[in-house]
Every structure is written in C-alpha cells, then in structure tokens.
Length: 118
Image (cartoon, rainbow, N blue to C red):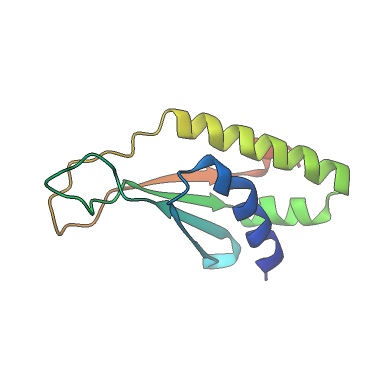
C-alpha cells in the first residue's frame, strides 16, 4: 500500500548510513519499517560481526498525513525526517556485546506525524 513512500523514505535515509549498510523494508500493520544494519569494522576475532540493528517505524498516521500533504509540505517533512534520524543516529552506538551466534540487539525508532510536522 505504501510502496512508493517506502522507496522514497529509503532513498532519503540511505546516505545517513555507512555505504555498506544492509537496508530492508517491511510493511507490518499499515506502517513502514526500515531495518538497517552493517558489518562492523575492526573486530579481528569476529570479522563478520554485524552492528546493532535499527528498526525505523513510520507510523500509519504519519503515512496518511504525508500522503494528504501538498508537495511543499512533503519536502519540509522530508527535511525534518532526515534531520531527526541524523540526530538519533549521532547518539546511536552500533557496537554490542551479543555472543557469537546470538541475534544482534535491535533499537527501534518511531516516526510519528509530530516528528515531521506533516
């Protein structure tokens, strides 16, 4: 249902992450969830160790508000979204202590309409 916005939001957020980050998308329960993780550098005993996962949830209400917004309002919302995720990312620590073979911890960020002021 939100495929066009899903691709748009991923294209906005992709430059914020390492170039080798894996970005996956799902649409659970009417929202968009962007899942991001990447291989961590500098872990000699675990060269394939993955970062802590990020799950960025864009709520259904936010998507509906964005869909109904005019083009200038969407552009402003895009800028606020990128700024908000950039701020969250600046405080994000991708390192973790999960044992080898155990799932990486996941941090969840929820994007509500109030965040992007659509």
